[in-house]
Amino acid sequence: MQSSIEREAFSTRLRQTLERAGMVEPGATDLAREFNRRYPGTPVTPHATRKWLLGESIPAQARLRVLARWLGVSAEWLRFGEGAMSVTASDEPQPEVDFQLAREIAALSAPHREVVREMVRALRRAEGGKD
Image 1 (spheres, rainbow, N blue to C red):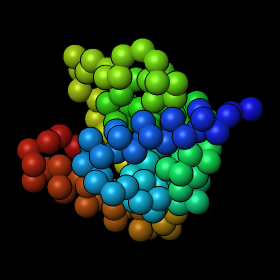
Image 2 (tube, rainbow, N blue to C red):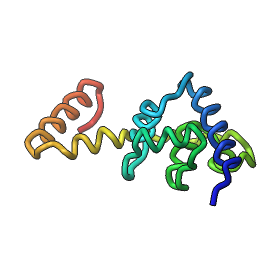
Image 3 (cartoon, rainbow, N blue to C red):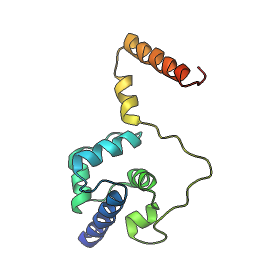
Image 4 (cartoon, rainbow, N blue to C red):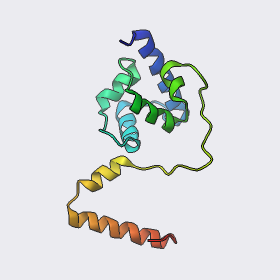
């Protein structure tokens, strides 16, 4: 079981890295929205992220890794405060996938999904990309 000291320390590190990332007064709703864009699994609720921010809980490892990757810190440092805070960027840029957008598109009817596909193709052609 996590001690309250561990949870509070995690919360402090999380708020610190969120502020460093530009979320000056990070709110639970904003954190949930931004996290869910980056997380392929079941979306988290603002209630869950509020608990992270207040030191009432620590996210599971898979979610912790997504948070760390997004915020540019090591998962070990974010969770335990140990090891190097920053991680070195990979030589190959990783495209950011907006999983929340993908879930919303998947919820559309088949004809509407096809409209989205055609729009994306047109935008890629306009930007000089390949189909």
